[in-house]
Image (cartoon, rainbow, N blue to C red; front, top):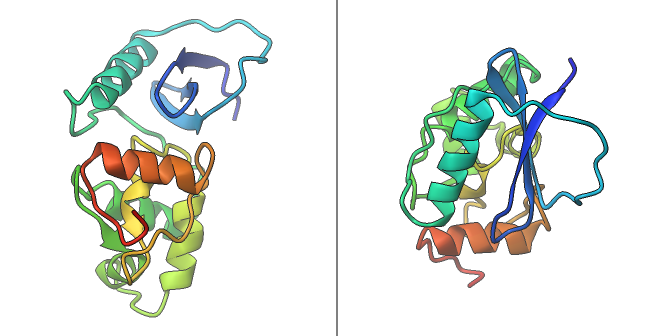
Length: 162
């Protein structure tokens, strides 16, 4: 799958690069360097993604309404990502909560792997998934845990790590 169309969106957590494939967002990378070569065509969808990301960071948007392509994942990962997309702004759930919600209560570790493989973080809000104790256990976007902490603070979510 080629991600030929993208848009760069400056944000408080670094430059965000959003890729589009077949009319859906396929990848979102947080804190990318500006050193990417190539030309992009900014489609209507990519411009809408930029607008919504800007609105999220300015505190005006609490729920993204963008089409995403989650087909790159396994059926298990897709199930986890769909569950993550149900977590509202300003709320968190644990890996165990997600495992239970998808009918696999003993699969919390596997859920953690799927959360880390989310191709469109921020849009599918994997930063809202925490350890059972409320601790931040990891984050693969941007600069890792500092990025996750920033996003949680932005959504007024207190953590035991704060």
